[in-house]
Image 1: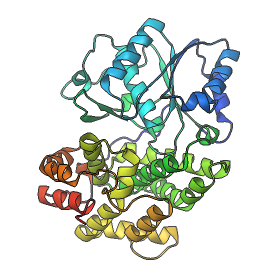
Image 2: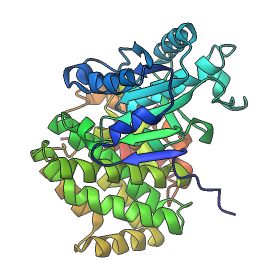
Image 3: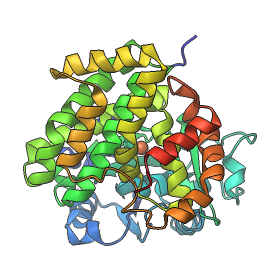
Amino acid sequence: MMRPMKLAGSKLMFGEGCLAFLSQLGAKKAAIVIGGHSMERSGNLDRVKKILEDECVNISVIKDVEPDPCFETVLRGAKEMIAFEPDTIIALGGGSVMDAAKTMWIYYEHPELKKIEDILPPNTFPKLRNKAQFVCIPSTAGTASEVSRSVVISDSTGMKHGIGNMEMMPDVAICDPEITMTMPSHITAETGLDALTHALEALASTRANYLTDILATQAAIDIINNLPRACKDGKDIKVREKMLNASMVAGLAFTNVSLGIVHSMAHTLGSYFHTSHGLSDAIILPYVIKYNSEKSPKAKSIYDNFVKALGKKGPLEDIISALNEEVNIPKDFSSIVKDRKAYLAKLDEMTICAKADGCTKTNPVIPELNQFKELFLMVYPEK
Ligand SMILES: [Fe+2]
């Protein structure tokens, strides 16, 4: 039997100017969570504050969420929230900020929880929304954390934990393309390819269904058709809007039917070598599409049908490789993880980690350990 679908939280806003919806949140005290200084420099933080201040909302800003947020940052933010007592939490930033803010929300609502293990199985996931509603305003078009039930948080050893529960679905997602206008070209490329990976892995997922196929197909088409322009001309708001909407729609699909081994491998490489998530997905994606096509006739026919819907010809992995090249994504990890010896030394551990990743079980074919090893070697070949 299929799992029940949930398409975003209670309110989903998208399109130019929808940031104004902040005035209708009914907030009295809002904690705004941001990352480094990009939201301050771009003026986006001030725009958000102005709309809230016009409604006499009392504001506290929680700053300095780092990329690949760690659990200590989550506890720091939760502590600030416990002191401020917001009725509304607003995450303003990319995937790291949204994931950290979602997790801060859990520990704010439940100060009795102290450790990351407290929200991991076999513990019961806590109920939220007793103290605050949760709002996401994405500044990148990629992770779709604004409509997803999941977060990725690193523990004190640097190991990344992917945690998923529908309780964490943000109540309000405000996807205004103006917020993404200042995103640099390489971040546009990496996050856009993360979104494309979400769409294509949802499409090939063993849990894929009629509705997620519709969402994932159109999202992938829009990303492939718009990403090069978004990278070349970040000031074209219509292209930014297409990318942000497509990322969000890919999120609606994947959060319901999960992903595949591109994400298992990217999570693993992120844990062991701190490679950026979007860039890792982008590099791995064509290799895994080829692998899945060779091992699973069903996956091959899904990819072939998608290429037809896209109006192109040839194997999907070639189309993705050409797109990667156009937006300056390297072909392999040699320029990213410089020490190949260190990479090889971790190969056995990485294969075990990738096989155990939660995304592996919905890949169209489940690789054996030696096949994962081959895939890790393919994405970083000897030269
Ligand atoms: Fe992702």
